Length: 166
Image (cartoon, rainbow, N blue to C red; front, side, top):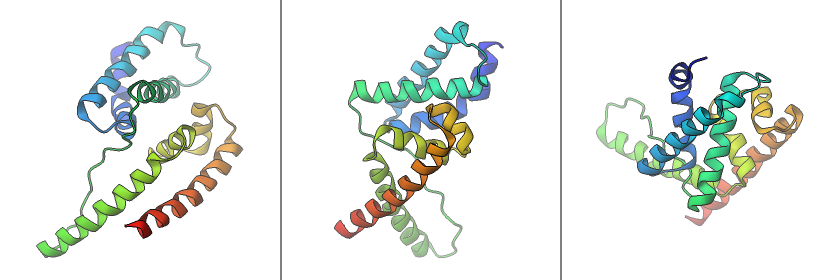
């Protein structure tokens, strides 16, 4: 498979992974480039033991984790809030403010999770099923299910604590 085709098929997913690990656009671009540089360098070592997209996910996650460690970067998420269409501008502003606060709390909370838990949550948010997440993270599917259940409970509790502090 040609690198250009791999790039086109995976660039959006890789970019979302970059957004989940770093906040500044410059760091995102650097990470994005580093990920595809690693894909390019390691393309010859791909062993067809898994789907090539899964392999690229694994490279993306590992590169992102290493990048954050090297940068000592605690930024977690970059996402824009999608607003429901409301007729009243004041209601829009109020809703936006509430959503921004809730999303900030959620991402701040996710940011405090250990690396593996962050990875699992990020992959779930990407829409991957437990089997794919198991393949990417290298842990069993059952372990992914258990960890995901525990992470949800932990996040809920941590978010409630953080809301109460505000």
